[in-house]
Length: 311
Ligand SMILES: Cc1cc2nc3c(=O)[nH]c(=O)nc-3n(C[C@H](O)[C@H](O)[C@H](O)COP(=O)(O)OP(=O)(O)OC[C@H]3O[C@@H](n4cnc5c(N)ncnc54)[C@H](O)[C@@H]3O)c2cc1C
Image (cartoon, rainbow, N blue to C red):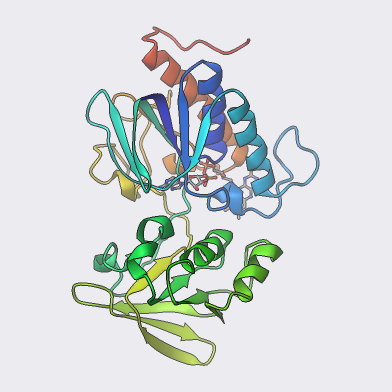
């Protein structure tokens, strides 16, 4: 049982963790990947106060997470799929199990996808996935496809090669946003078919995924495949896992909060890009993480006001 579970370890979540850990709250951060959030994918950061040298977003994020961990926050690489926030004990369900806490801070950012391709929606969970750890084993010794050109897509491709006989890796753009080492590892893997400038066009299947159509530089190709893993990014808030949670959202699915970053559900807070503010900057997300953490401390310790951490 944790005091607080923080879903998403970007600048908002990592800063919240720093403050809750320093407030002696037992803190767990669940984050699906260091390089899948907005800061994690950013190649250069030159405007984060206190860091005059140019860093990659992932380097800056690692420093933030390490600082929070040094005060006792626990970080786990886990994708959260659903939550039950109705009772006093908040339940968070992830690929490797269930976690419980007295409070939850939602900081999953806004790197979700905008447009789905024809046929995709009903086939999620029926052959289409975005979690190799959860679903890779279902495709043992079969051919599958992965779509995406970021570090997460490439890392998941390598992970999936443990199970499947072949991965058709479709990279929509020419610019692969991953480290040279990962690119080299994936390109030279005997089970990977590297398909540059291939875009997902359509998927088909009745009960389960049956075929995937791509548009490549030389035209269309349809592959008969039981599995497709999608790692495309856009600008949508990542709130799908909150569908049944009762957390209030606006018309664009951004989470609604008050001045303390509290949602309409008691004990549930949100901050960072997932609340849809106008200024999307790492320093803003970090500042909101601080506010959310102090509000969690107030909530758990039943204080009448927020106590600031000057220790
Ligand atoms: C290309 C680009 C360049 C940018 N450049 C700058 C810049 O120069 N300076 C600047 O200040 N800001 C910049 N920004 C904006 C800044 O990166 C964001 O405002 C900031 O990262 C938002 O922080 P966040 O913690 O809310 O979300 P994110 O940084 O997106 O972090 C969200 C985290 O949640 C995790 N997550 C998502 N879903 C789940 C799930 N279901 N389960 C578990 N974990 C999950 C992700 O892995 C991720 O780590 C840039 C953004 C982009 C996209």
